[in-house]
Each structure stands twice: as structure tokens, then as C-alpha cells.
Image 1 (cartoon, rainbow, N blue to C red):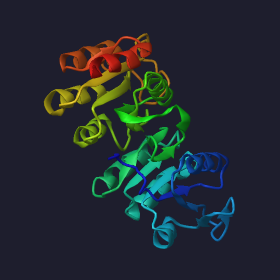
Image 2: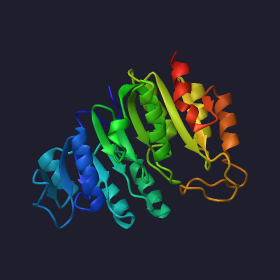
Image 3: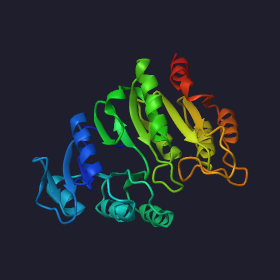
Image 4: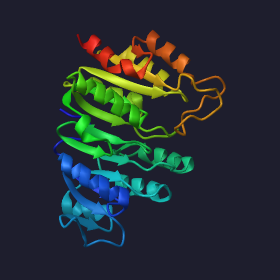
Length: 290
């Protein structure tokens, strides 16, 4: 069993004819993802690489190709409308890669999605991959290996680092989710941990957090009260000075809250296996699984 995406995923790519959209669509198809349609307003009727039909709207892609998931490669100024279009057509999963969506736009989307069945991943994220089954995102597929460890992260590059370490140790992954580093996102740590806890194939979870906000502390409490599976965590930004944004829009320590030390302390108290360095992630997972 995979969570969010699998062999039955029928993907529509919003912004398929843009540079980033075109490149990553080819990568996803090469990985084995079933890309059934693309959407670029005004370019309906064309075919991407002579095989993927392009439509003007998501509604057309759903009606004619049976799309049930979407990935969004459109400029940040239009990304919010793209999310709303996919959610409005009741797609099960929507992955938004776009970085720089205004926070006010995301506030409106957050409220809208509360009453919808659509699960948003992102924005400002690398996407989702269920190794050996499907990839809906921009991560390098070749570093992944099918297996029993879930990976969820606010950082794209640290996701790749953790996955590479696991694969090198012969430890495969069930599903890897990049939730994104913006202040307001669709799927958070608790949402992902809940999915992993229910997934019979996932035996352990790697959670990669960073400074800013309280998402990691909330995740720790969820682990303590609801998780039967071991969780291994690393928190990035341990040397970041308070009050200065480091990397992601959500990675800022405000009012003395959101420091790496504070997050690591809470996670340890909640029974999470905390790594001091990203280099320890793979070895810690191997030790916990044994």
C-alpha cells in the first residue's frame, strides 16, 4: 500500500508547456508515473511530446482522461487559482511546486480546502514519491528504493540526503513527502504521520524539520499520543540567529520560539529519536529498525 499516490494515480500537469513543467513531466513519465493530461489555457488541442493531450481546463482533463491528481508548475501569481481549479474539480491529491505564493492567497486556499476532500501538498515543495510506483514531483527518482520507511520533510534537499543515506544502507522507502517550507501549507507533519501510522507497509518514519513555527512540537505530541511506529528526526537550522529568516519563508525564530534546541528537546521528551547531525539519519534508522 502507498499513501497519496500509487500505480492508480492519473496525473494532470498544470503548466505542462512551461520550461519547468515540460522538464519534470518528462522525468515523471520516465519514472513510470501515469501522466494522462496537461493543462495550459489557450493551448488546448495540442499534444505534449506527441503523446500527452493538453487541455484548456482541469475540468476537461478530468472529464476526458479521468485525472485524479494534479501537479502545479505555474508562476506564483497564478498558482493559487490553479490550486483552486484542481480542488474545485475534486482531485484527490494536488501537489504545488511553486515557490513565492503570497501568504494572503494561501490563507484563502487553506480556508477553502477545509470543506473539500482534496489533499494539498505544498506549496514550495518537491512533491511526493512512492518508490517503484509513481512520482509526482521534482525529486531525483534514481536515489529512491522501494521499502518500509516513510520520509516527511520541510526541506527538499535534506529529503534527498536522507533518502540517499537510507538507500545506500539498503533501506527502502514507502512514500516520501516534501511538505514545503512556507508558513501556510496544505499537508503538515501531523497529517503525514497519521497517514504513515495507518499504512501497514510503513515500519518507521523519518521526519525532517527546521527552525520556525511550532509544527515539529505539535508533531512530537502527536507521536507521543498516537504513534506505535518509531520516528527518527533531524532539525535543521541549529546555528541560526534568532530573528533572521534562514532559507524558507517559515524558517524564522520569533519571540524566542521555534529554535532548533527547543524543538529537539520537545521531540526527545515525546520519544522521538533525534539526530544531532544530518549525517546520522541513515545510521539512526538502521539502528532503530534492528
